Amino acid sequence: MQLEARNVSFRYRRKKWLFRDINLTVQPGEVVGLAGPSGCGKTTLARILAGYEKPSNGTVLFNDAPLPKTGYHPIQLVFQHPEKAINPKWPMKAVLEEAGNLDVELLERLGIQENWLQRWPNELSGGELQRFCIARALGPGTQFLIADEMTTMLDTITQAQIWHGVMDIVRNRNIGIIIISHDTVLLKRLVSRYIDFPLLNKDKVSY
Amino acid sequence: MPLVEVDDLSVSFKQYTKGFKHKEVKVIHNLSFSINAGEIVAVVGSSGSGKSLLAHAILGILPRNANVSGTIHYDGKELTPSLQEKLRGKELAFVPQSVNFLNPLMEVEKQVRGALKGKDSFKTQKEIFEKYNLSTDVEKLYPFQLSGGMARRILVSTAVINKAKFIIADEPTPGLDQTVVKEALSSFKAFADNGTAVMFITHDIQSALSVADKIAVFYAGTTVEVAPVEDFTGSGERLRHPYSKALWRALPQNEFRPIPGSQPKGDELPRGCLFAPRCDMTTTECLEHLPEKRVLRNGMVRCIHAT
Image 1 (spheres, rainbow over the protein chains, first blue to last red):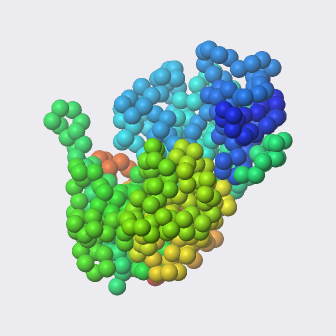
Image 2: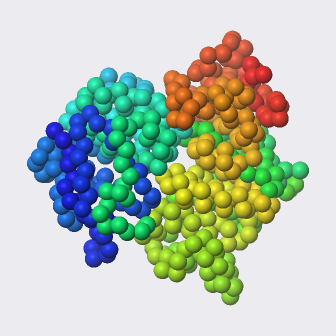
């Protein structure tokens, strides 16, 4: 059930390569930290792995096969800004139900209070919205989670609450997780393997 | 005398629920804040604690349906809407959170120059770009083409082109790598050394500690503590308010252990101390009324148990 990026390269149209020949394998249940300067392509790689973007060259393999084109995507991405990842005109319950039935235990583990489900996105704080985004990304079909600066916009208490919850869930379900962050102290707390993104990139460009 | 003094500020919104039914949502209440020339005050607290709204209230850019009470003084004068309009973008500058605040269809050089009029504007803009290490190819870029670090420098440039006396920077650091963060922070430090007051809104306590003189901790729309940076040390024993202590202890470099619960919403605020439902020192007195702010050990606190 591993996730593998094989010789993945990317560039925008004819512009210079953002990165070239990235090789990366993540095992189920593994916690991988990914760091690097801003603009080096971490988010683009995350989008490629989660199927939002196609690589210019190379392939992403899940379970030794190409990523599925239809159905539930086994690799889910959580973004930095939850308010941009949620439909402002849907109540929170609808936001969650788009991804399937509500899993009460999961909501509880992420600290989502029941009365929040009746609220509109603009009535909740960033930390509360981010919990919903995580719950939405952790449907039963999720095998890998990519957290792209997932708690960067949150205060330290909320950040710690969310990470304790998420780490419990991924451990229980043997989900692999890639954590992208500039906060090296946070990464040290969480990950079992740390990757410096520029070292993955064979095409040594300056940022 | 402080350059900016906010006293007993309250901001609320009327929110329609169904038909003509509406409820009052209090987003800021009984908030006091002051800053001196040449000083950097960091404002920390969770999202939804009213940090950005305070900035918007000072700048006079709150939405029209906001109910505001309390007073704001700037340089000894009451900061009225007309004075705000006169000073905004000149003496009062704002560094917004993200490139979303820029015009997506306009080259960045024009936007940076925008605040400035006259024939010297080109020269000043070029000087500022040079100072912030923005090469000449950046000038013609559109906001979506900027990397996080470049965007940050552009936003700072728009704010400083007019030699502001008071700069409000709203979350200028998250999601940036250490080099860019250091760069942004040192530019704030440089402003302060030149006598500018800088209000630095953030939840990155680590960055706040590295540049600020004092830290104001916000919770549920009010200031619970103001402390000199030196008090953020060890396991937080020198901090005054239990929320500040919890905030400090939850840092990954400290204990990384969160307290349970979440901040109360503006339409369901508790009657007494706002932190009481999550606090382990709560007594019946705490539940009765909001603690008055008081001066304590060279800082301020809103807690009856603080020593």
